[in-house]
Amino acid sequence: MNTNTRKFKRLRDQDGHVIGVETTLLGLDLLKCSELNKGSAFTQEERVLFRLNGLLPYREETLEEQMERAYAQLHSKKTALDKFIFLTRLFDINMTLFYKIIQKHLDELLPIIYTPTISHAVECYSLEMRSPRGMFICYQDQHILHNILRERQHEDIRLIVVTDGERILGIGDQGVGGVEIPIGKLMVYTACAGINPNHVLPVILDVGTNNQKHLQDPRYCGWKNKRISGADYDAFIEIFVHAVKDIFPEVYLHWEDFGRNNARKNLEKYRHFICSFNDDMQGTGTVALACILAGLNAIKGDLTKQKIVMMGAGTAGVGIVDQICRAMVAMGLPEEQARKNFWLVDQQGLLLNTMDTLIDFQAPYARDPSEIAAWNSEGNISLLETVKQIQPSILIGACAQPGVFTEDIVKIMAAAHPHPIILPLSNPTAKSEATADDLYQWTNGKALIATGSPFPPVKFEGNEYRISQSNNALSYPGLGLGVLASKAKFVSDAMLWSVCSTLASFSPAKDDPTQPLLPDFSQVMTISRTIALAVAEQARAEGVAGIDPSVDLKTAINTQIWQPRYVPYYLKTPL
Image (tube, rainbow, N blue to C red; front, top):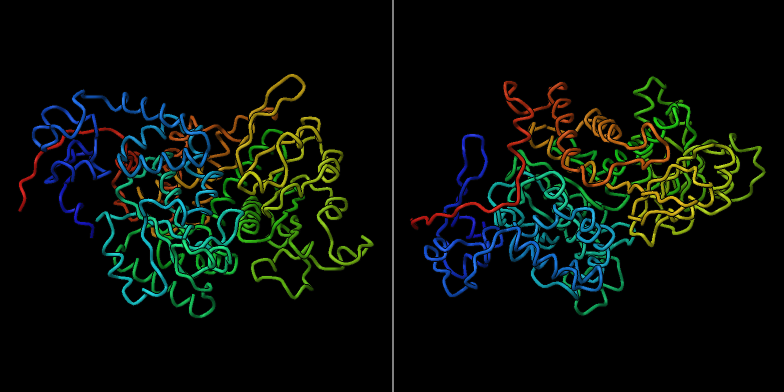
């Protein structure tokens, strides 16, 4: 374990809130500890006590004053990537100040610390890497995996976000650069739900890469080897999961950006062995479903009667479809009938049950060729042809093919439905299936829209409309907070449904279809707390909560929440 964690102790009141810190760290050692560094906010008494005189400018500042200066410095940076680098450097210097700025300016800075900017950071990780963060677990080190995990920076780990870097956002296999994804996800957990950053661990499983650019790059920081697969890969994942379970028996394991052949397999295999969640499948699905529920509430539509076309039938696409299908079943529709409401289009066109390229999780939604016999189509059936024939009320994209939602496709939907729901969910922004402005223009402002990447407000017929981002940051932080507060043994489908319905209840569009489908991030802490309570209550109702039945769940949630603030420091006498 990192030696610094043995040199300070957080002092807590009877409710579990931190009210001070005892530490043996002195001088530069204290200033170099990001978790403890206050910089110019150390009091005069603390400067004397911890031998900081002469190491800091004389003036004592508040956290708010520091934040104003750092925010001004941030705005001197010209590009989004430069801002990302500045903020990550600030995190390395003063974690409290970093989160204070992020929470104060969340709407502005969330796209900087996560999507879409993080995709650029991932791609140039080996060039821009300055101070490695997170835990790097290479396939070559599997025999010492337990020892690696024991060398974590923080002792009390409750949440791990892990990736193998194979399917990063819409940019594919990025190898070791994928470590930026769990780092960014955990920042969002803290910024949006108050998850304590001292209780989290970002992990990259370095199993090689098939990205030739990285393999040929002399600066590439990861294991220069073709990505392992098959039985070797599965065995490595099993070693990792069992090591995590051994060392952190009550941890919440968040899987992120695994390839389509492994994401679902890993989740299904370990979902009930260790409390697990896959954001690409479950998180994306919950927010997309919340958008749909909000849109249908606005137009008084019935979910069970919708015709839905999904463009992109990979991990995220089928994960979204699964969430919607389960909701239809929960509303009383037989499962077989619910599946018939979906048409999935992938690289090979409309999925048919006669295709030998089907993946097992796509098969339940593949159509029988007899259903399309009257279409007079030859070869692969395109998205355009599918939309012409089906005239869906809902169109969703998770294929990372920019512009695939063409004007013809959108106008067919608009002609058939007064308020089509269109969700181009791929990110980063350059991979979006359509732009928000085009969707407004092509539907005469009638479409109900949410996008996977942030778009500026659309100006249409003299009015300006905010575009909802179907951002998982509105769901998974609250889910995680509820899981940790309730000590849930696993994440059930009913818990995920509670996330969807709770988030949809915050929709500005629920009574007015001209309003955004989702709330903005100014409400995110309230949303996360509300989701957390719904999740914790559901976990308790299902008997999967590990928390004592006598504990009030609101109190349990409040005690989990960490706030970026400075507390008094006291000198701890070394042992």
